[in-house]
Image 1 (tube, rainbow, N blue to C red):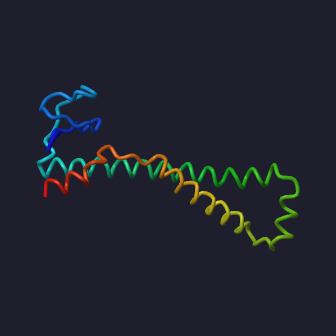
Image 2: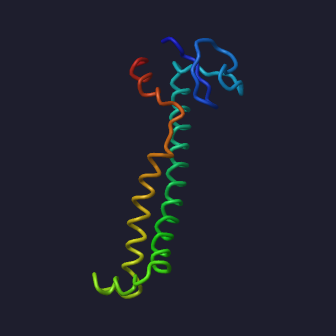
Image 3: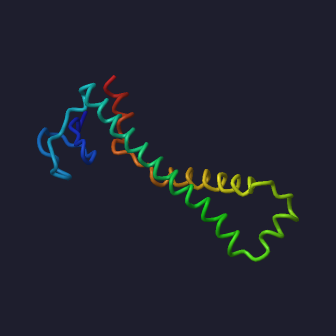
Amino acid sequence: MAKPWVCIDCGARQADKGACAACGKGDTLDTRDEKVRELMYDVDLRLRQKAETRARMIGVAIGMGTIGACMVLVPGYWKLRGRLYPGLPGLIDQWFFMAVIGFFASKLLERVLLMQRFPYLNEQQQIVD
């Protein structure tokens, strides 16, 4: 293994033990140790969950904002709603549209926001085992 030492703070690998050459924040850890690889998985999991949460919040805001803007800014929106399909009581159809738009927006944002700090971890797992 050419670069077995990894920095948990930035994810950079290096050949020698010591301070991280990329960020200089702390000491590097040996990736040949199983507990270090578990720590790397945990860090990636927390980053992924944070990105998913952020994407969900932004997706909900986009969905609500889109439908709200249509209700207020698009002339004839309410007449069009009655002609294309019968509106459901309690504006349930509008809530449904908000949810659909928010879901797709959040899934697109997850792809953009999701970054792994240790993208080489799966490759390394195969090499070590």
